[in-house]
Length: 354
Image 1 (tube, rainbow, N blue to C red):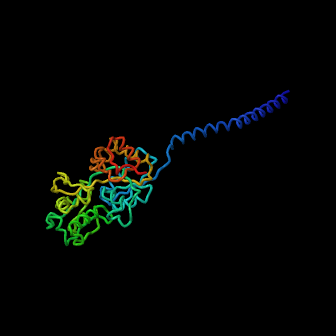
Image 2 (cartoon, helix red, strand yellow):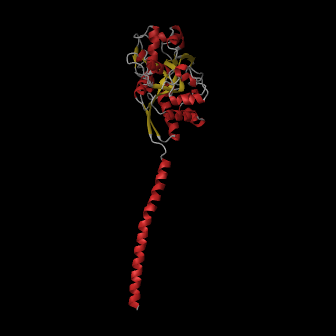
Image 3 (cartoon, one colour):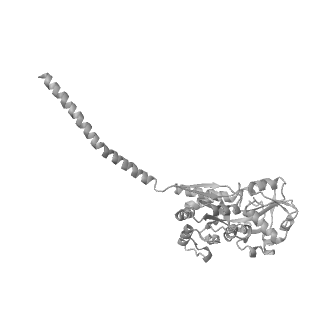
């Protein structure tokens, strides 16, 4: 009897084990399916947008272009993690205009002069043809043409640069082109030696006596000039007077007359009249419309604008009211959407063409 019961117990236990295994096999697919669905749902929610790779072309070391390019990247990265933006160095405005025109994933910091002349294929761009792929996004800041010389120099007015070595800005920069344009109208192009250095390198060349003047179209105050004033006593030349004398503003209407702000360099530089230039962010026409719209929403939000000010005080120029100063060529579609929402009047020549 005991043997029979023991055998029956073994058989029962064996059958129960088989039944449990069968149930596990039947239920497992459903359990796995639920888990996979949950994981897929979690993944879908986490990665709601595909990564988008862009570059913003800045400028030389110590310059405003790279600072503003970096500021835009910093603000956007905080709110749009799917946007992967790199900041690339360059010679400046002329180079950036060319490169943005060729790269469908590029934005760039440029002067209004190069954006206008590049789009229309004029001046330095005449031989290579119009850069019709570039579009305006926004004004970033107003640049001041700052021509520095040592305080004890006998260079007192623009025409005195004849026979001198002048740090003209990097080759391919809007700074260098500005000096060339003004000196050609003044009839002195070719009568001085332009040294194609910009930013910190140009300031050091003046400090070390390698050049007699250092011209730079840049925001105020500027770090390279600040550093120079801590080592040397300098003066700045009046560039507005020769600009008016030689018809500079009439030939190049995207430049503006102005003056170095009071106290710009803690009283170390006497304010002078000079040439001003709106500085813009441009983009290739094929950059996504919603991406450009998002960039503008973030940099003009109070938090974003404050972050830009921490990067460079000249971001104070980035106001809705100043926006129209950037409208020298057609707007990018995303920019048009943003500026239309701000009730800013958009001239015919700045209307989107895509």
